Length: 240
Image (cartoon, rainbow, N blue to C red; front, top):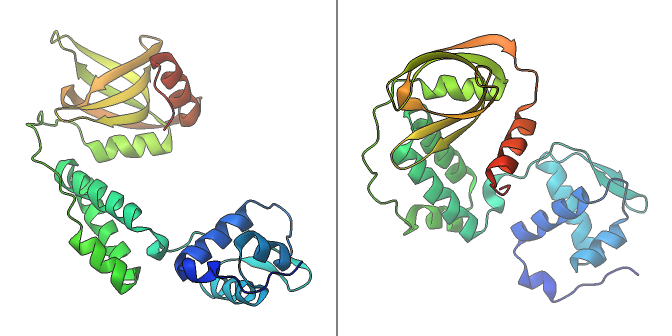
């Protein structure tokens, strides 16, 4: 059955309708007919064809044609204009937190991300981004950093073995070869989570107690996601 015009079409913003269409296409691995998509979305077939054309103009790789069905190739991401007001508030609040508490590169990244988001938002949502009343409170006193956090993040992304010179809470110094896979940001300290070859187990290292580090060229033998999953299970931390 081909869907005719429905009052539901007025209830949805055009941006939300396009987002729903993308999500529906992503849920199908094989071509799905326009008639089926229209029924699922509660819109007319004419509107469905127009929305597919709009997404294709925005860069979506949607293969197919009327009567044969459509399939979305992997890799397409909608621009930030699809954010809801709550999502914008969450992004602004999170970015403000990072801009206030992150290291220099993360602070710059947070500010740059907000600027890019604002550049593509429609005027009403851009005003909402500028006027959001969600504020970040004063930061607690942070322990002075001795390690380059951007270097640590790069080691995590690249899954590289890293050598650190570490001073524990008893002021005992040691040299460790670790497999870094997560970095926790807390009010007072930052904590590097890694597999320690010396201890043959997961260990937590305060970054302010790392006096020096060297990221090696050798990749550690397990995937970062697998290490993170196993560590979460041991610590009883639910997946986010």
